[in-house]
Length: 394
Image (tube, rainbow, N blue to C red; front, side):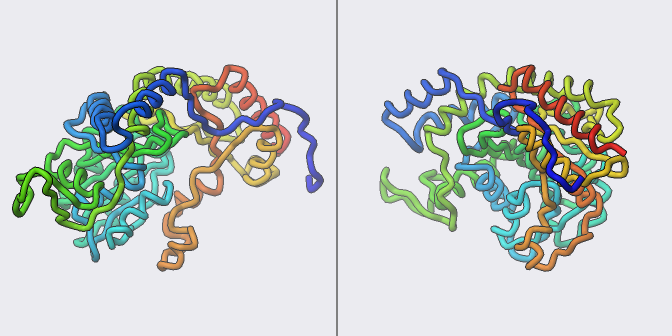
């Protein structure tokens, strides 16, 4: 088993784990903006914000340059500052915790539910203190968190819920789209997400005060709104009232996002078709576990994560991963628990903090999942998984 294995040709070209799907309508939307009077701070921004708000059913949507900037804005709007604690999940991209640090707060990592891989409400309750200002749950892979339980905890302790929906645009919780039930929800428009702006992020909220703060925060803390000005010297006048950031989205990004959003239902339906095929193919493969699907949460399937049963294999996760890549299947891994990154270890976080998250990291593999995959692509993934696990099975 130590010698390199010749897996043969499963497919001629490399299949990535995710990829955007841009069509002629998307290109034309961007060209139209490039030929218009505004490339930034123009009408395409508001059109995109309205389209997102309408899609999820929220009162307000505020666009940002990227999802990380949007999370930072939400932390500012929530009033997070030096000395505050914020409960976060370790099973996420680093931005979900970094946004707390940007505001001087302290991320407190709570462990995940070993079925859903989302934040465990019982662990949230266990980690809350008098210093807790907010909870940032992440809809991992596109499956919404247990919102009822988390919102009840937040209400009991008078803390803000900033839902990181980077994975879950188009997902449903108890029949309602994600984006309206938490105090604020962030959506990401990175190319691997359900729809893309190239880069981009949005905060949705039903709170007018949060909306006003977010709009001002993304543009240097500057406002022209007369109801907030200390004085007004004339129609040209504006004031910087706090230290904000230049986190504005461009009209170019917004135009692409608005065009993409028109196709989101088709994109998500195709994702679901692929997931169904994976589940059918893998449900009786003893060396792996397919994703758990919560009864009240309908995922929009950003990622498809299988979990290996290493006790039934003569190889570790690394060998399985490398074997899949050798067959031109672009598997990936989501995620190294945030607190195990060197920067966070330098802050004093230690291994063993969240055992369930660490166990998932040791056994998880992300399979390719994106709407542009053909049926042949899907069958290539299934074939590679089955032949790899069969080869290494005890």
